[in-house]
Image (cartoon, rainbow, N blue to C red; front, side, top):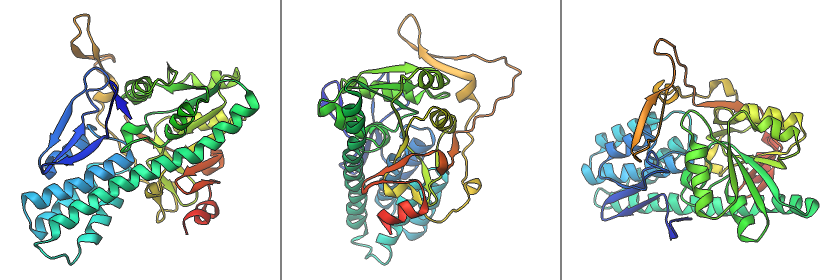
Length: 356
C-alpha cells in the first residue's frame, strides 16, 4: 500500500539491517527506523513500533537473523528465541515464526546458517503478503454480494488496526475493503478509535485515507447505535489468536462489537491468515492475555497548538488503572472466518475443512 503516493511494506531487510515503519509516530510523523540487532527487534515489538500479529511474527523472524549476524552462537540464538517469544505473549504468530525459524535452522551448517535464516525470514514475509492478498479476494465476494443486494454504499465497521500496517501489505480485515475499493465498489468504513492506543484512529483511518477509501472515525461505544439505525452492513475485524474451535482473541472491545452485531443481525466476520490459528489451546481461558502499562490508558498523546507532540494525563492522579489489551469473542458470535484458503464457519469442523 501507499504513503504519500509511494508504495511501502511495513518491514524489509537491507544491508544487514531490518527497516520498519515506526508506528508509534503515526499519524503525525512518518519515520523509518533501523533495527540493527536482536534487542532492537525485541524492543520494537514491546514498544509497539511494530504491531499486529503477522507483522510481529515477521519482525521476530528477522530478529533471529540479526542475532546470527551479531553472534553465530547456538546459546545466543536460543536466548534470542526465548526473549522474542516473551516480548508479547498473546499474538500466536510470534511464537509460530520463531518455532518455524528454529525448525528450519536445526542442524544447519555454521557457515550456511545466516543464508538459510535470511531466506526463511524472507519466505515468511512473502507468504504473509500472499495470504493477505488472498484473504482480500475471498472477503471481496462477501462485500460484492452485499453491494449487489443493497445497490448502494456498503458500510463496514472495523475495530483496531488489522490493516496493511499490521501485516506486510494489504492487511487482514482491510484487504477485502481494499480489493472492493480497487474494483470500484462503493465502500465506507466506520473506524473505531480503539482506546487506549487509538490504533483505529491513528493507523486504520490513516492508511485508508492514503488509499482514498472513505472512512469515519467513531468513539468505541458508537457501533451499537449505528447498527440499530441500520448504518452498518457488516463488521470485519482481525485476530491475534484464533483457537481451533473458532473462538477469536482480538483487541479489547471486539467482544462487545460482536454482541451488538448479533443482537442486530449484522454479519460479523474475522479475517486471518492460517499462521494465527492456535491448534493446541482448546480453552480460551488459557490464552495469555497481555496487560500493558497503565500509562497507555491514563495519558493521551497528540499535537498541541504549536504542532508539537505532547503527552498529557487525563485521569485523576489517585485513580487505579487496568489496561487489558485483548478479549475473546466466542465462536457463536462469529459469522465466518475469512482465510487465505476461503471462508469457513467459526468451528473446528470449519477450520479443519480448509487446513487439515
